[in-house]
Image (tube, rainbow, N blue to C red; front, side, top):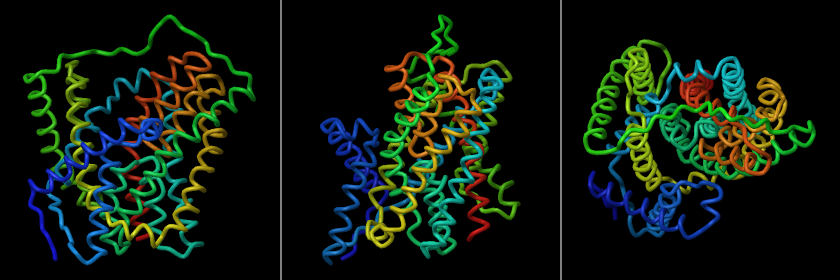
Length: 391
């Protein structure tokens, strides 16, 4: 028996999944330690229930996907609005070197996935799904690009990418600390404390008026993104719809910076985080669990290879490019975190090193700014190029 849920029923199930995930995360330290998002926890539980109902022959549940796409595009619009070239300029030469290390990693992650996929005799698009799409890109990128890969015949790429990104959340926290500590111990590095804070944070009041202003900015940026997508459609490459929204957000943010106007980033980030939570919940409740089981062994091989590679890469490339000092070692911990997981893993890895070995204001200022721009600006382009080469 097939049950089709409408837009509000689908939203309701997603909110239940999110609430369940929050409850479990607050009770179990493991999920807190490895920064597993609440929507991932609850969404996977619901998707397993849906899978069991389908396999038992009782019910096949079909969710509405309109809101999933909506919240995905709003989230990536907000990501674009956080990309400030003005702040990137403040990071100086160090920021450019870190950006180079981050950008070089992206095609290498995809090459690892593609090369191993040929040896393992699976579709090379699966290798890309387990490359920078899910590793540096995270769950959101895995879902959005998974649909593109599926349109080229790589069925279940979304589920494979999400599973890889979930593994990355665990691996990112496990790899970063030990790699950075080995560099600190091997090179006898010390923290250089500073009394001057580099981070200029402007707080703005979050209320109905400021939130409404943020909604207007996000909405108009997304509207601009529809026209950016029309321009991208003129190329021979097939970009996900969200890319236009993200680039439009970047354009709007830097127009505000040029005019020396406060865009109210706290409100935009708040709405972006809400959109992300709902997007992930809506996407994960409809995961096809059976698709992951069939490719489990190749996934394990590729994921372990990605984890080993980033440990080597950050030790040789990121560390050397960013100065071979204590700040560089802290940024290595962060790069391992985000190169396998997501931004929270990166910040947590750096915090753990700083708590034990001493402060690193340079790393804590430069890394988040460079990361936001380097990854969000270049990874969609890199992924799209690889998909169009190996489709």
